[in-house]
Amino acid sequence: MSHHSDEAIPSATSDSFWEPGNYKKTTKRTEDGHKLCNDLMTLIKERSEIEYGYAKNLRQWAKKWEDIIIKGPEYGTTESAWKGVLGEAEKRYDLHMKIKNDLEKDAITKIRNWQKDNYHKNVMHLKEKKEFDEAFKKVRYVVI
Amino acid sequence: MSHHSDEAIPSATSDSFWEPGNYKKTTKRTEDGHKLCNDLMTLIKERSEIEYGYAKNLRQWAKKWEDIIIKGPEYGTTESAWKGVLGEAEKRYDLHMKIKNDLEKDAITKIRNWQKDNYHKNVMHLKEKKEFDEAFKKVRYVVI
Image 1 (cartoon, rainbow over the protein chains, first blue to last red):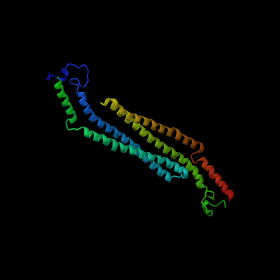
Image 2: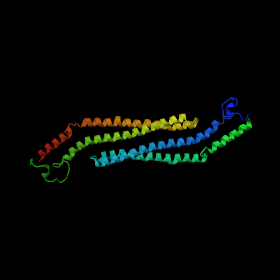
Image 3: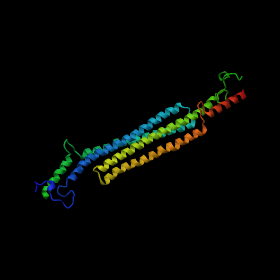
């Protein structure tokens, strides 16, 4: 029956991956895993850009108003209170820049390294998927 | 000596506002106060726009990735973990939208009302500054 196509095999009682011809969704999981690493890195990168944008805007705002306050007529404790508001923004800038850097340098780097260690891609395919595909095919012939 | 200009008055031993002719920096304070209310409202408005921008970006990012994750191949607990990351962004959206609204509806409104209650501006001048100027001038003539 080895000349039969996958579709010609009588339908199995379940669609579990161990049924004849059903291994493909399992090996596709390997391919998906590689793609999902890329997606996750993109997701994190986009979030880090949002954090960076927020931090940058806070700093620009603080710098602009510090200049206005210093040159303006306010003085004494009220001037200090105004500056205190800007100080909060500067601290928030530091915090969100730290989040941005941690996401990029820590989270993304770890995913990239994990992907590199676990998947080996050439022009045509993932080495790991090919190996799984071939192993499943081999086992199928043994069983049938 | 009432025909003398302010400059012709012999220099005082201090430049305190109660010295002859020195009242102007005091009444200017009234004018400054009105302007500083405007500045403070602008400062707060600009900050609220930064909060709004951050919140909006977080929500867009969460919606975009929720769609990708739902349509994508990830499933089970890992899919839940991805969605959890987006849930955090949604909560942060709520928080920063609250900050934005509080700044605009609470802080700015209070300053605007306080300014309106305490300063009365017509085309030419602030009523309060004019009154103070006239009071100082009147007292000066009494003293001299």
